[in-house]
Length: 327
Image (cartoon, rainbow, N blue to C red; front, side):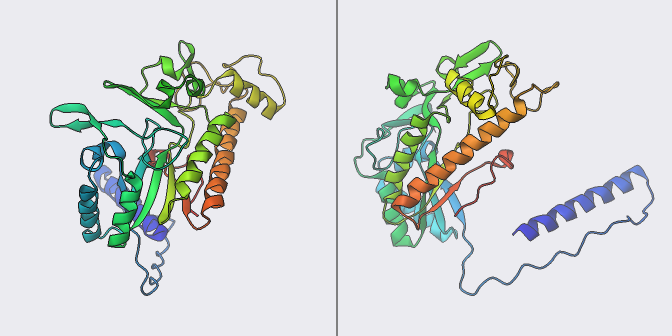
């Protein structure tokens, strides 16, 4: 697969360069370099099927799946007929509540979805196990079922109101991230941002999530677990007093100009100029926090089910955000 990508990139660049030469009237002088001939992909192992994944978002599919096992089986049958081999089921949407068995947090009661009449609440009245219904349907169709969670989120605010543990529990609300905004350091609960992120640095947040993952890994027949949003909430997160102290421990000195010596107020992307004195160390510290959490999360999952696959989901716009594979 990687070889195909490299070959495609080479072909695209060559085509672009060739187009530029024609359009600008330049000569057709042979370049001094040559692209190496792509090595053909090795023949696949006999009988080994290439996996094909489909992602089942919780909110987008809630009108069909929240209260109907029949609809779940119907659509998984269509996925099977279309050639898919693996189904990834979103069981912890951005509200932070869940669609699997656990005593750590509440079950999802409703999600917002776009219906013909507009953006509306879709309530879940069924009491059967949502994830188990997918596992059962997958088993009957010979499909592998994986579970995905939105990791460092604890609530979601929309036009329909707030949903999630951070809107119900003051103790969990205190775990939410403080953002370095243009107007000063502000807790995310005081902003209009929809997804309410936790502070990944807090040990209690990490243990809360690991407890959930242990319950998730206990499902018999679950092929894998994917962590989505396993990150800080962008450049502006987290600038709480707790994270400041942990960062100062990490670098072995106090930060005199906080947060300016780390990042200018309200800076959301790219490297500022001049580069703040502690910015590189700050990015290193953040990367280590996520790396260490991923190790803890993987250990929690494997302690319950050593055979379940564990990995992270990263969108193409975060191509270099992590260097973590599925194992």
